[in-house]
Image: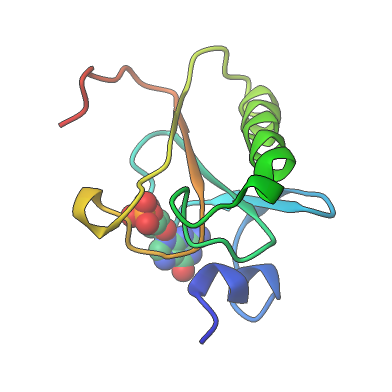
Length: 111
Ligand code: DGP
């Protein structure tokens, strides 16, 4: 069954899309945890980092550079990039995504 993010990629569910190219999509998180909270996803349906394979190496790098692109588009110089890998650490949508968070200060380590 298609995940929520596959449906957003396919335009079956609306989202506020801020960036798209042939391999990735970036859209605003519906429950923002910061003034800027954007999700960067590969269009390829990879569940998470654990499920990625060696052939995904360029795509994973591309996703990180898209995180930088959207952060720059939002005027951020300092920002956090997070991926939750597995339900035990908070992954709720099983389509790989990178949270780009900014516009406020953050604690380290995260709670
Ligand atoms: P995670 O918990 O790491 O799997 O993050 C999933 C994120 O997806 C969470 O921050 C909320 C966001 N989200 C859930 N449903 C929707 C939706 O329908 N639209 C958008 N734009 N974001 C969603």
